[in-house]
Every structure is written in structure tokens, then in C-alpha cells.
Amino acid sequence: MKVHKKMSSMELIKKLRDTTGSGIVDCKKALSENNNDVDAAIKWLREKGILKAQKKQDRETNEGVISFYNNKSNTEFTVCKIKCETDFVAKNKDFLNFAENISKAIHENKNINDNGSDEDLSDVMINDKSLSDNLTDLISKIGENIQIVSYKKYYSEKSIFITYLHNKYNSNCSKIGSVVEISTDNQASALKLVDDLKIIAMQISAMKPMGIDENSIDPKVLNDEKDIIFKQMTNVPEDKKDQIMQGKLNKFLKENTLLGQALITDPKKSVSSFLNEISKNNNISLNITSMDLYTI
Image 1 (cartoon, rainbow, N blue to C red):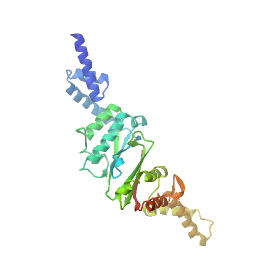
Image 2: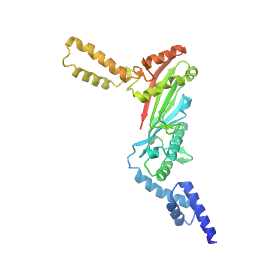
Image 3: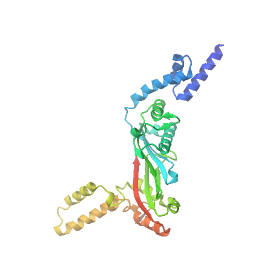
Image 4: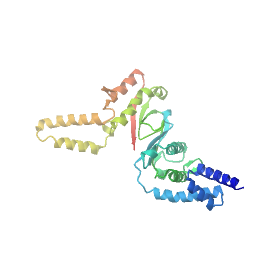
């Protein structure tokens, strides 16, 4: 009889570990405190886990992932930025599964804002459990603070979205990700050009432009740059200052705007001339209308 009781106890511990991810000692104690009632033991561990999670939620998060869901559609997808404490956990299978699950849940939830932070996600459910409960479980299991920093949904009937993940942890997650929106007069034809246009999303991740063109750069940035150029022209004749100012400003814009930058795969071409070339060769209108760079 004793052997049977011991085996039964081990089976209960294994079931509790598989369900909660908690350690053997915690599982033994939970079962002991709750007369071997697994459901009661899960509740007991949850309550204990909540206390653990609350303590951990004050700790600093400097690592994490940018998670893309459904981005291969190039017309409708969601990006979520999730942070943790260490790079080790950022590559952890449970953490990456959570990143995919939360990105999917946000994407499929039609009742939330198109972009926001964790404060906008109180109604989001994952596997029939609230986001808060899922986070508590994960923090208790992994042992690190985890925070959902932001999310954004992308959708368009008149544009395509080109995405890029640099040094991926899996097919959907990385520490650097970029999105470029290209409006078009023929979405179906534009979707066939995704592979050719991929380099533009890579350009954003590699060169980190401040804006698409001069009009999309913060006027304060331009004014500050003009001020710097002006202060460097102490020995320049007055009649040459405007010309030099414009020349230096043009160089700054070329280096810091997406359309002005030299293409990373062919520096003889600008991104603008590359896009015009593809448009002309395929008899299609293509214009960059927005871009986003995500980094951890």
C-alpha cells in the first residue's frame, strides 16, 4: 500500500509541475497544504506566484523581442514589443511562445485600439485566461519581470507592407524589426514584388533614417542642424554662406532620409531611384507612405 501511495504522490507532483511549471519542492508543499487536491494546489501556487510576480514586476527590463504576427500576408499583421530582464530569457521557448500568443490575440481582437500599450489590453484573452493571469503565470515560471511595452496593428487595402526582422530568434521574433508601407494603384501586382522591395525594409533597420523625406523630419531637428552649420561657418565670406548652408543641409537630408539614402546593396542608387526603377519596370505606382523601426 505504501508503494502505491508514493507512486500516486509522484504522479500528482508531475501533473502539478506540468500544469504550473513550478518546482518540485513547491508542488510537494502545495499538495501537502491542500490534501493532494490538484485544483486547490494550483490555486495555492497561483496565489503564491502572484506574490512572486508582484515583487518581480518592479525589476528593470532591458532585453526582449519585437514580435510580428501574420506579417507574411504583407497586408494585415500586428507587431508587439515585449521586454524581459535578460537575453537568455528573450530566447527562452516559453517567452517566445508567449510573444507569439499575445501578438496573435491582439491581432484577432477587434475591440481594442489599433495601437497602444499594456493599458489597452485588459480585455485580451489567451487560451481563455486574462492577459494579467497569463503574465503572472509566465513571470512565476520564468523568474523575470516581463512587460508588454507597445503594439500596433497594420491593415490596408491600398498599400502593401514590407517587413524585416534582423538576426531572428525564431521566424517571428527579433531585437530589431522594421516596417515600410508602400501605397500602390495595384495591390495584387505589388504583392508579387515583395521580394524585390525587401531591401527597403532592411535599409530602415541598417541605416535608421530619421524620416521618409525632408517633410517628415521634425522641423526642430532641421533647425538645430542649420544652427550647427551656421556656427561652423565662422571664416566663410557672407556671400558664400547661403550656398554652403544649402549644400551641407542637402548632404544631411540625403544621409538621414529614407528616399535620399544610398541603397545598402548598391550605393550608386538612392532608395528613391531604386523604387522608381521598380515602378517603371513593372508599370505600377509605388510610393513610400510610412515607416516604423522597432528596437529593444
